Structures are given as structure tokens and as C-alpha cells.
Length: 364
Figure 1: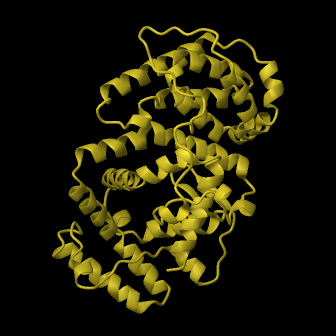
Figure 2: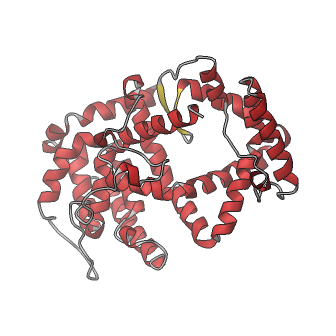
């Protein structure tokens, strides 16, 4: 309970950003050291991966962004001092840093604009660096229109994208805390693992592993097909699992699709929807991400229906789930990059994206 109250307090403080900025105290020495160390670590990371990461991320510094976000959560009253110190330590990363902070702390947007309009008080750079524009969108005018995007990419609220969960978010303050925490974990762990996996794994192997994990989820789909009384779909799922697990070498090859047995998804949240259960409130779960009350219950039931829960030990099960998480995160690299690049509010647009994708799944 104290952590929840503290988190809610942080977001209440955001609305008082201008006042807090004026009252900001000197930045603690320990926090300055953490920011400086993160900035240097990020530069070393970029140097080591200069031939791997794309041009847009050459000036990004995920280590610094994570430390800055954590520092602002800890001491929102020192927002101006934290941002100034970060911009002094890594001016080449200011554009990426500003974009991240603006998305995570919209209440500080005005204060951030005033900071980026003024030159840094001091810059200590050992070697010449390229200073990024304070406007992260200066090199890209606008995102491609929705009709030119893949079907599973988000349509932003500012573009008219539907957010059916906007009025079902009574715990938005707490949801934002989990949203930003998940984002920090993604920056630190999951995104680097996904990009490393993409770099070292041939496309054909990536596709095969994705199919194998799809095949492992077939028992869940089969059980929910039966619960929804969709017996023809259940027969298709059973046949696909039997064929792909044998002839398809544990699902690495989708032989069943070549025989005309097309894949589909089904989960217990969808089953509840089939019987008229509404979404309920919008939730952001630690590690699992955005969902609804109904689908959170469905997630728990699906884990019970998953044979991996019964037959694998704890270590093997977690290792398998971690591997699947990296594979699924790799599949979302472009979509997440697109959202980070163009979204005005990451939280709102991810909520809208969640609604849009879930509506498409429930319409199957």
C-alpha cells in the first residue's frame, strides 16, 4: 500500500511541474554520478554496436534514459536539474531522451520545452559529437497513413484511432506506473535481447521458431474452441497440432497450412466474450503489459490449460516462456519503433493499440 500511495503521489505532483521547477533543489551528488555513469555506459554500448544498430539509434542512449526516468520517479521536484545534468552529460542523446521523457511524463512537457530552448550551462566533451536537434521529429515530417501500415500496427488517437478503453481506466495513475516500469524493463532487457536475437538468427530460423511457439499454444486454442462450442475449429486445431508436431518437426514447419488447415487463435478471454462477458476495466500488469479485467482472468485460466504448466519443471517452463518472449518481442520491433517515433502520448496510444488489436481478435 505505501508503494501504491507513493506512485499515485508522483503523478499528482506532475501537474505542479512549473511550481516544482522553480523550487528545485541542487541535484544530489549520487544522482549526478549515476547520470554520468549511465551516459558513458551508453556511449560505450553504441561504440561496440556501431555496425549493428540503425542510424536513428546512433544518438539514443537507453541506459541514460532508464536512469533519468528512475530519477524523475524518485525525485520529481528535481526534474529540471535532472534533465539539465543529463543533457550536459550526453548532449548527443538529447532528442531521444526528450522524446522518452515527454511520453512518460506529459505533465512536464511545458517545462521540458523551456529547458530545451535554452543552451546547456556547461558541456564537457572529450571528443567531438554530433548534437541532435531538440525536436525528435525534425527529420521525419509525418508517419505513413494508416492504410499504408501493416494491419497490426497502431492507429494513433490523434489520427482518429479508436480507444475503447479510455473510459474504462479508473486506475490510470497506477497503470501508468506499471506501464513505465514495463517500458524501462523493455529498454534494459527485452529490446536488446530481441535485437541481438534478430542479428544472429537467420530469417528462416526466426520464422521456424515463431511457428514452433505457435504450435505449443495449440492445446490452449483447442480447449477454448471446445468451450466456445466451435467443434469444426477445434477439429482443425487438433489436426494442425498433430500434423505439425510430427511431420512438421515440433511445429518448425507449418505442413498443416499446406494441406489447407489454416491457423486461428482462441483464448479464455475470447471464450468469456463469446458468452457475453464484457471487457471490464483496463489494466496494465507488471511484465504482462496492457489488458482488461476479463482478459486478465483469461490469462490465468489459459495458463492452467497450458500443458507446459503440468509437464515442465519451474526452471524449464520459465526458460521456455522467456525464449518465447524474446521471439515475440522481435516480431514487434518495427511496430514499437514506429509508435515511439511518432506517438504524442505513448500511454494513450498503447491503450488504443491494445483495444484495436483485441477487437480484431474477438471478431475472428
